[in-house]
Structures are given as C-alpha cells and as structure tokens.
Image 1 (cartoon, rainbow, N blue to C red):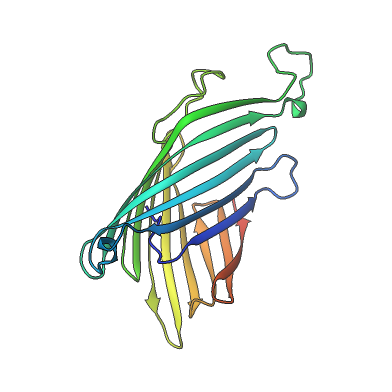
Image 2 (spheres, rainbow, N blue to C red; image 1 turned 90 degrees about the vertical axis):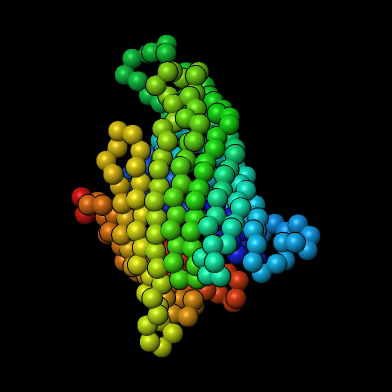
Amino acid sequence: AVAGTKACIDIRSGYRFQWVGIDGAPQTGFINGHAPLKFGKKNRAAFGPKHGIGAQIKRDAFGPFSFLQLEVAYALHIPINRNWTISFGTSLGFKQAGVDAAELTTEVSDPIVPNSSQSFYVFPDGKFGLWVADKKTYIGFSVHNLYGQTMKNIGTASDFQRHFYLTAGRSFKLQNNWSIIPSFFVLKTKNVPLDFHLSALLDLDNRISFGLGLRRTDAITAQVRVKLFNFISIGYSFDFIIS
C-alpha cells in the first residue's frame, strides 16, 4: 500500500544475517522499488486519488533450504482530507522453494532423501495492504501469503500460513531540528506466539538517526542511519539477544 506514496522513485535494499557464527544460519536479502503512477492531467489535481506501482525481489536461505520471491504491486491513494490519506495496495507474484540435497546427511542411506537439488514453484502468491498516514503519523496493516497456497509436491502440510502485520508510528518535534519517532510492529500467524517490536528513533533533520527497540522478550535492537548527499541513506542494525 506504500507504493507511490512518495513523489520520487524510491529504491531500497537490505540484508540480514542471523545467528552469526553458526553454519547454515538464516540469511535474508531483498531489493524493492516503488514510484507514483500518473494518468494525464486529472492526476495532477492537488486533491484527488493517486496511483502507485512497485516491485520486490526477496530471498531467504537457511541450511539447505531457500525461498525466492518475486512480486509486483499496485496501490490506490485516496485523500481523506487535506492532511490524511488512506491507501489500499495489493501485490501478485510467485515463490520458488529450493533444497540443496548435497548439504543433507543421514546416518544411514535413506531412499526418500533426494540425491540432487530440487525446486518447487508456487503461483500465485499475493499480499494485501492498508496504509493511513499524514506527514507525522502512519498506521499500516497487511496480510501476506494471501492465497494460502500449498507445495503439493512436498506434502499436504506444506501450505503457506497467512501472516498478519500491524504497525504504527508518529514523529514528535523536539528542539534544534531533532525529532523522536516511537513506533510498534505486531506479527501474528497460526501456531506461533504473538510477536511484537517496540522502538524509538531519534532523528536530526532527516540527516542522521539512531534508536533502540525491544523485540518481544527475545532481543534488544539498536540501529543507526546516515543520509549521504540528498538521495542516499545507509543504515545498520544489530540484535542483542536476551532470551
């Protein structure tokens, strides 16, 4: 639903490496981009619906397993008043699940374990999102794995559970161009405890920011972001495990 909320083309990329020092630890990488979509003179009105498009490539890898996702997104932005806008978005794509059998070992020879790498494809894969925001506040809700597809070649219990996300935050002005941005993020999916992340970010004139957060009872998070020139930002975050 965020696709096209900015006046410019917005491109982001990230990489997460968990459990440093453990072989086969989870790794996640992504790149996405979005931009406003214009249709003639009508879309230039200051007060009227807007459109946005976006795309994302994401890859998860852990041990011998990997997941690759490709998707495109469309969003519709409807002004509520001069300050607030409500946005509806959806995405469509596919997943590729892979297993590298060369990394699998068994104590005895097992004919059910494949002797070569295998890939499975899931289509369609979809998401839905809702975004309500003004210049200082945002509220977002989304559903992933919308269709609950099943990888039939693996088994009947290999369906993708729907993930539900809720997030919100607000920017408060402080002195000397400083702002503080508290936020929360909540995740729920079947058979998994409710997960949440609370955080607060200190920002100096949108040039440099740093903050702390708490992810359920598992970790304290720290992050820093620096803006380079007028169009590039780079950030780093770290989880201090407390569980």
